[in-house]
Image 1 (cartoon, rainbow, N blue to C red):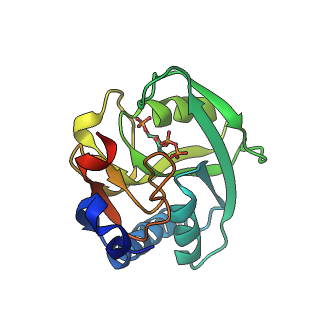
Image 2: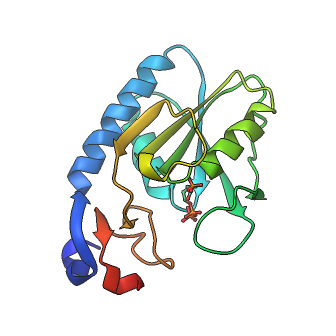
Length: 183
Ligand code: PRP
């Protein structure tokens, strides 16, 4: 689905599919340089990270293993309570492994902060985070993020894996959702 198909639902297009792919290519190149000569496992956080994982894995010019986790926050409301439970754990034993967690957005930082400490307790060789988007103004918990696509304003963004009530994930671009859609 292109932004033209949901034009009236969007305030603007923040990043086009082409811009996203270009940035992901740059991030993959950076990661590839940093992990030269080392085996690498990338871990995608379901469900939003599906698109960025698929494009990033294919942007690598080297072998990379892929695994997935699904997590969910307890509590109600749209934002994380800070308490996270694992819905699907890794299939891989990460002890002694170099791990890069890949997500599409860091909002409050609660999910990734919890996840980093959870993964670190499994004795990996290293754990780093790569996120396509980050909202510095929304951050509640410091997260050490090594690879960031873009910092964005604290607005409701959808597309490229990001949803509003499970819609817009399949939008190729990333756009700001118009208030009339969610108010
Ligand atoms: C998103 C995103 C992160 C989390 C970030 O997932 O993939 O995991 O929110 O938010 P935080 O920094 O405030 O913790 P979401 O809970 O929307 O689930 P989804 O990936 O299935 O859409």
